[in-house]
Length: 120
Length: 237
Image (cartoon, rainbow over all chains, first blue to last red; front, side, top):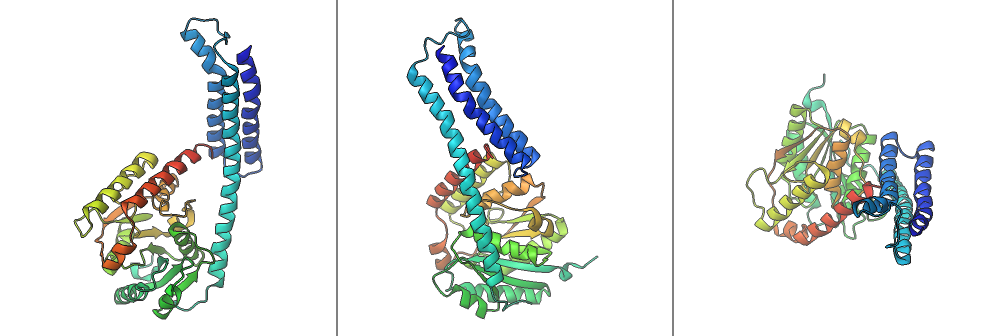
C-alpha cells in the first residue's frame, strides 16, 4: 500500500516531464536525437522508481508488493526528489534560454555597432 | 581551386583589459601576415574592458568589436567567430591577446589546416618542450585528461587559446559556456558535429605580463567544476 502511494505521487511528475519533452519536440524546439535521448533518461527514472522496490523484494524473498519497510518519510523524500529534479531541470532550461538570448543579442549588437576601422 | 594565399583569413583576439600589450600583439601579427602575403583581417573582440584595449587595438589597425556587456572568454571568442562566419572568411584563428603566441605559430596553424584539410586545429603547447612551468604543465595535462574522460576528445592541450577553424567549423560550432571551460566544451561540440580535430605544436611565450594575467591551477578547479556541471546538465537536455 505504501509503495502504491509512492508510485501514485511520483509517476505523474515523470509523466509531466515526458509531456514537456514531447511538447518541445512537437514545437520543434529540440531535434529527434535529443528527443529520443530525453525520453530514455526519463524512462529510466520511471523504471527505477516503479521497479526498484519489487526487485528489492524479490532479492529479499519477500512478497513482491510488500512495502512494510517503506516509511512515510521515504515516500515524502523520494517524491520530493523526483519533483525537485523536474523543477530544477525546467528552470535550468528557461535560464539557459534567457542567457542564450542575451548572449546572442550582445553578439549581434556588438558586431553591428562596431565601427569598421581595420579591414584589409 | 584557390591557392592557400587566396583564402580569406581572420585572426580573432578575444581581449579583456589588454591595453598594455594588445597594440604590439596586433603589430606582430600584421607584420607576419603581410610578409606571408595572406588576405587577412585582425579582429579584436574587446570584452567590455575598463582600460584602453579598444583604442589601442584600433590604433594598431585591428577591427574592433566591443562587447556591450562582459561575457567572458568563451563569449568573446563566440562573437569573433560569428563575425567571421557572417563575413564569409575561409579560415579563422583565435589567439590570446596577451602575446602568449608567436606569430610564426599562427601562420603555421593556417598552413597545417590547409595541408591536413582539418576543421579544427589546436595549437598544443605540450607537444614540444617550452617555457611552460611544471605547475602549468600539470594543470593543462590534467584538464586535457578530464576533457578526454568527460567528452571523449583526446588532445594534449585542451585549454590552448590558439585554434584554427575551417569554414565548416565556423558554420556548425556552437557552445554554451562563457568562461574558460568553453575550450573543452568547444572540442566536445566539434566531436558531436563530426568535425575533424587535429593538433600542431606551438611554443608559448611567457612574459611577466602574461604570467601575471594567465590562469593558475585554482582556475582549473573552477573549470573542472563547470565541465562536470555541463556534462550532468546535458543528460537532461
